[in-house]
Image (cartoon, rainbow, N blue to C red; front, side, top):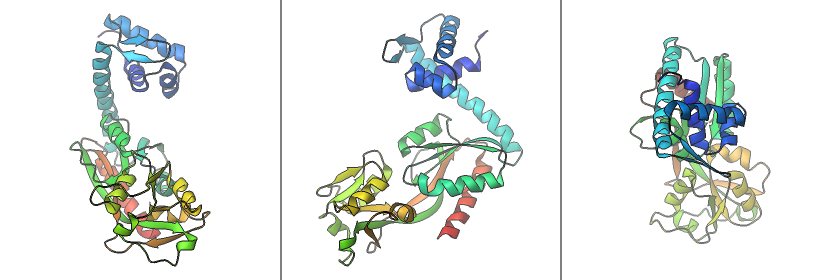
Length: 298
């Protein structure tokens, strides 16, 4: 179509993703009037409205919804052409978009970013921290190059690369430090603090504490591991946290940390990326690097 540009598609895709002119314009790095102008130009080119404008939100028309899907596919294919060119050099340069879940990001990212930058000075690293479900969707839409999550994710379009296993540690009040360490049955009788719905670590902890799928008694929720540990320090209950987070989250809390009896709960941390990604050889190299870093930290 004469006059249709990649800029039109990128701006429209951002608007469909955020459903708001202001947030979409901010994500694209342009002003809201400039974004509105680009969307109007696209509608004029197509000869039909793409959105229903209102004061509070933007709704896609039938054509707009279909175009949003096609635009994501086109933009993803274009991005992969750039990845193909980068992959041909055998080195990592340019933009690298990394997604990480919140129960890994604060404890792995500082070392990972530092090491990646030292080995690849021309790399432009972009980070996104959010829950697994969102990261998987972002990968499928081509907005991320890889993600670090708890495996498995069981998506047929994604390659899963295990990195290492880590145990869950029991955090309880200092006054309980000398008490016997409870097993899974014992934990179900305690006030257990867990992350909010949507976090995969919550589901993993519950699967250990509640093999019969019944929720523990007096279950309470927190927004972060830090919040949970501080609540334990205040005597509100007990919680489970991944081993990599212990040093960071317990240094300012009056808590005790102990390993649970066998069979101990654990998770497999791994990388996932699109099977079609031209950067697969370089991403395998990053996986090898992370394994080396985890062995040094052990």
